[in-house]
Image 1 (cartoon, one colour):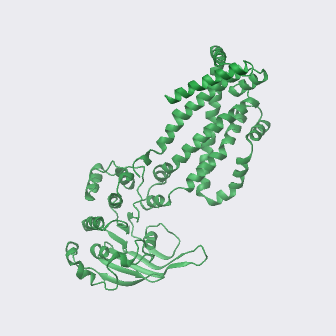
Image 2 (tube, one colour):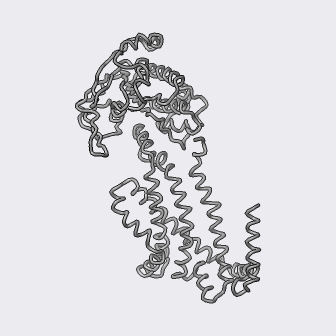
Image 3 (cartoon, chains in turn blue, green):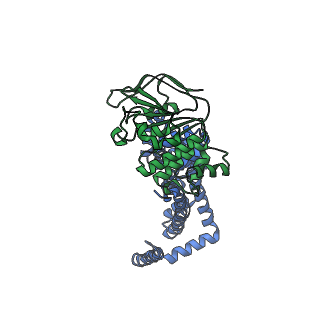
Length: 245
Length: 241
């Protein structure tokens, strides 16, 4: 109820702001809705939102899988950690824009370069989070598994992965927020479609109605994924903590 | 086959550079099917010895001949998987366990109706019983018990000790119990081995011939067999070895 009220207040403030600043500086909610409806009828909205969402999911999945594997390996192998840690620090501090431009220069303006740029930007964060998770694995439980002759598969499935799940969920939540912002820049710089491309076009035409018509549903979609997919996933990763102390 | 330890040397490096030698040329034989209590004060090497026998520490000198077969262990902490139910904790230790065998094992440790509980819902006493049940459910050939009653109040300690005595009597296996409590050693073991000194050596060996069911009523007489060791756990000091 309070959330709905908050949304209503936001739209009201937007309307007042639009009336105060004029339609060129800030279009009204009704004007943006009309543009959105037009894009939807033409099929452009579904196509571009769909393509962007596909890139978010593909880049995010690539980064999470590769980053988690390397993070866990670094957390459990101190020699590998010492070897790769300086690279990780460099990767963490390299601006996203540099990675995107280098990916396009070296790989060409194509979908593979775009996905590589998206994944490479998220990859170091996944490595760092899962490395912390692997470092925090309880050695006492590993010893128990060893004495009771758990197979390698059962040690991972029943002993280690449940301990890593909260770290994976945290990396996923933080990762999605980062990835969808990067995808827009990747599309703006080197793709002929997607929400980022449409925003770039709107910027060149100074068409704020088009810009907001794409930005708002995209943000709403990402919030929905966060609320209805990632948060429940994080809760389920920690479900056993609710069974007593 | 007996458990044979010959010329064992174990040194723990210390952070400040000075090493701590826990065992130097230490030897011990435990005949198959014997229940042996390793008695001694905290830090005396009892837990280290059990960890070496359990294969949890490979950094030692000398030879350890462990009988072939299944090893069960109860640690100082229950070490249950908190994201698995009590029943699943036992099933994971004994893949292929039938529901009937699971129920029987839980009943033997007075855990009826607890199979669906999660470790976070259990008191320490119950969690220790589950840890004992997990060690027994695999039907071990060698059972290692490291201070299995640590941190329990006296009432729970006695109740769990009585349960354990029943389970040990019910099945022939080699058992090593690390304890600092003389009464635990006298009531559970066929043989008490007193470890002491640094590096640790066997200082006394004591055979207990009194049948287990008669030991409780003869505890005062049994304590007199071990004048070298204080009978109160507080006097022996701490609950870790």
